Structures are given as structure tokens and as C-alpha cells.
Length: 299
Image 1 (tube, one colour):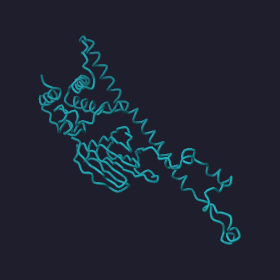
Image 2 (cartoon, helix red, strand yellow):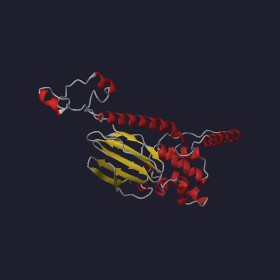
Image 3 (cartoon, one colour):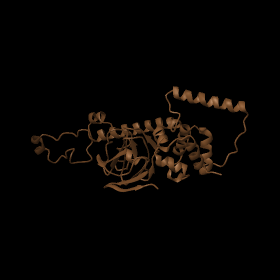
Image 4 (cartoon, helix red, strand yellow):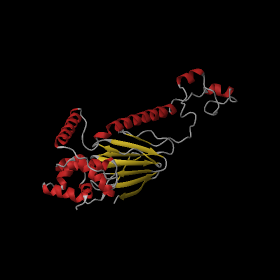
């Protein structure tokens, strides 16, 4: 009995469809498609990405998407085998009609019914959190750059040499007007040395850095999925569309797993870094405070 990948290959060759045609239609690298046909599931990004690849492959070849995804889950061991439910011809026809109606509704509403349609609510939620984090970071940076009180005139400094100036003393109490103009920050003012949690920002410009931090920017020239770990904290995986950019900053280490190494551009503190890699290759790059530490292909 053929394996799951062999069945996919047989159906594709029966319809005289090449891997390049599927890759062009789905934007999935031929290396990923070949790994799927060879049952090398460990070479795929994993999770919802794998199910999305199977669903897109089935759509191009003309197979039943839900049935093919269920067979993949059984073959990969993600879920225990499920006995197929026996339906009458009328029930099966009604089920297919219901699925077509749902697919048309998603298309008419502007959502993609393919690989990542079910992730849209989480994507919006993550984007809102990133925007809030960027706004707080910009506000705190401007707060620290607010103008300091001017030193007293030279004529008065001689007669008041025994009185410490605001620049020479850290315990000077600001006048009420200055306090009202610049209210203290509840987060940064109470613990100025506490390190900030690593964040990633979907923005074209690098976020302001605190002392001891560095930034790595990822710009997608072609569509590519990325998985980021910053200072030991794993950030949510995401799919970068073409011409989009994401920036992440940390203090110790940033590890980035790229699903399309040849389709992205990396910058360390604003300087471009050549990490190598071809289009469709999965590659992991690691950065430290001094720059690029390691760049390896994922087998």
C-alpha cells in the first residue's frame, strides 16, 4: 500500500502536473513540495503551516482538501487515526455544497480560503499588541530626551557656588510647573535598570534602542514564513508578505528561522548582513550583540 507522499505523487503525475507548476500557483518552494511527497515531514516548518501546504497542494491537483489533510495527520502522527464516517450520497452532496458556499463567502468577504485564512484573527491581535509596544517604546524614548533645566547665569554662579545645580545633584526636586509638564512614567521611572521584554515590530524603521540592546530587521522580498526566538523567548510565527518588514530587538541573542532564505534581506543595527541561502530553503541565523554568530541550513 503506497504511503501518503507516494499517493500525492501518483495523483499529481496522473494529471501530468509538475512540482514547478504547483510551486508557481501556491508560492511554496519545490523543496517543501518534494519533502511532502517523500514523507519527510521533519523538513517542513510544522504545525498549521504543514496543513496549509497539504491543503494548497490538494487544491491545485484537484483532490478533496479535508480528506487529504486528515490523511496527512494520520501519516504524520499528529492525531490518532479517525474512522471515516459513512454518509449517504445525499448527505455527502449536501456537505460538499455547504463547503462550497462557505468558501465563496470567505472569498466575497476578502479573506483567503487557503493556507492562512484561519489565522487572521490571531494576526490582527498580534499586530495590535505590536503597535501598542512600539507606541510605548517611542513615548519612553521621547520622555528621556526631554530638555533639562538650563544652568544659572555665570554672574549668579559665583555668588551661589555652594548651591548644587540640577546637573550636579541627582536629588534636586523639580518645581511644580516642570512636574506638571513632564509627568513621571510609572513603568520606566520606578525601575530604570529593569530590562525590557523582547518585542518584534512590523515597521519600516528600526525601533529606538535602550542601553545594551541590538536590533535585527527582516525585510521580505518574496513571501516567507519566519519564526523568531529573542533572549530565549519564542515569538509567534508569522508569514511575511512581499515588501513587508519586521524588526526585533534584544540584549543577548536573536535566533531567526527563515522558510525562504533567498527571499529575505537581513539588517543588524541598520547594516545589511549577507546570511546566504537559496529561494525556498529553510535556514536558521543567530545574532548576538556583536553581529551574525551562526547561519545554518535546516536539514
